[in-house]
Image (tube, rainbow, N blue to C red; front, side):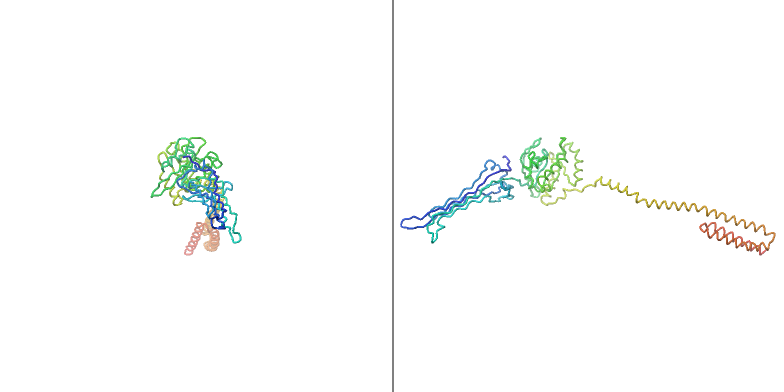
Length: 467
């Protein structure tokens, strides 16, 4: 059966029947009075959603639909028969729009849903309804009102829970044929699928969902290129989208990442709401050797964007169960945790940070270098002062030796005066020595030598007194 998802039709409701002008004429009855009946109501045009239909093919070849008009009134108080309503059945998911105003008149989402699009005309009243005490013979009746007439545009948007997206020859038809009983046309050339295909997927624990195979969408589809937005409308009602990336393509103008960005751009141009629907990204045709070679680079790039990747192969059935588990979780629970991954740290950012740290490092190390230079300066200053102290310490013993020699030379000549002179001169020299030691206190060795020399002089004076 040919798939038709958009038609333009003209519908008209039935007109109401006219009221009758009649008078009672019977033998032996004079002036029977008016007895004209009312006209019947015209039939309305009603659209009803039928789950057994999947196409608008019936309205492609029959574009004019008219409901019957009501019958006119008759004499003897007989009213006209009302016409039956015209019920037009359409597939579930049909959108009815007024062609002239663009107003949406009905949107069928539930099976069996009914909407009156054109209301039938009301029947006119007969002359018996206009008889009064002052107007006993009315010779007029009321005409029926005409029914509504409209030009409508019917758009079919398939009601599917899961939609398959991807460039032509990405493996969408093969995938739906594996997970459901749908048997779309499968061939090794692009644009094999020209109409959407629906398949019922039987999941675990009695759960099931409907999957739609959307024909291949290419660049510029939102503007009418290729099949255009003719099939983009079928994706609007899907709750979850499976985005298939063709990893086995060998043409120069095709790249999985470029296809991914192009298709998302077309979805965003067509509808902003459509671009925010959850997507399950699957890498298909991984049974081919050259597809495995580019898998790592494509996976790494998508994970850098925070998108989880599901490797599959429709030819061998690789990775089908994890893919269906993720789709079912998003569809039945609304959780999208598995569709996102933690983004790895960007290497460029680390380089920038390290460069900034390298630039700031000299400023922080400057105080340390200054402190080190100050310490070195103090060490050099102390090192320069130390020899002076040592020299002073070395000179002090030289003076002691001179005192001892003078005392030894003068002792034989005059013992008594020598003792007094030694006694008088020794404290003066000791005081001088002590003052030198007090000034040069840091040098402990020099101070110790002076103390010992003073003690030796005192013991020598005591021995001489005993003698």
